[in-house]
Amino acid sequence: MLRGCEAACLRRTEPRNPDIRPTRFLKSSRSVEFLVLGEGFSNSVQSIKPMSKPVPTDIKLHQKSAILEISFDDGSHFELPCEYLRVYSPSAEVRGHGLGQEVLQLDKENVTITDIRPVGNYAICPTFSDGHNSGIYTWETLHNLGIHQKELWGEYLRRLRESGVDRRLQ
Image 1: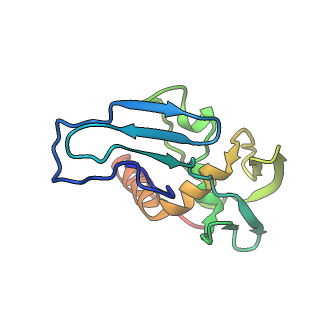
Image 2: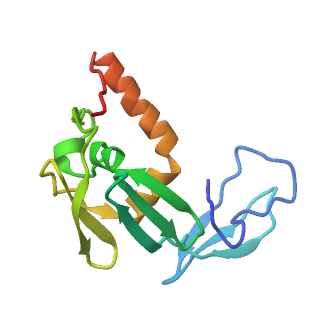
């Protein structure tokens, strides 16, 4: 499903027929064009600009509450707990080197961020109070963590329960 596009890529003129597919894809340097030919579609070329990735407009670390507050240019705003960021670090230490190699992070309830280094103009690399500093959080990763915070946090708590681990705040 295409989202965030300025124009729909397929313009239907008749009811949906699952056997009809776009017949050719054209590429240009700044957009993707779909030439749609076939029964049930108008013969047209629609230009679609690539979906722009959200860019932070403000990042604040609240050390007392252990929250990273981040606002993006798309208007979204998230308050991400340090523990949440730590257990979902994009590092190989947490995610592994392939599917099924993820490592459940334990005893991160009281972790904080002690330092944040910029990585180019596309990411940050926080240092956590437990010494972890190898996760590079791109703007897209931070945005996705914000959007999916409720589901991901619930999944983490479920995995802890299934492992027989109690999450204790001190």
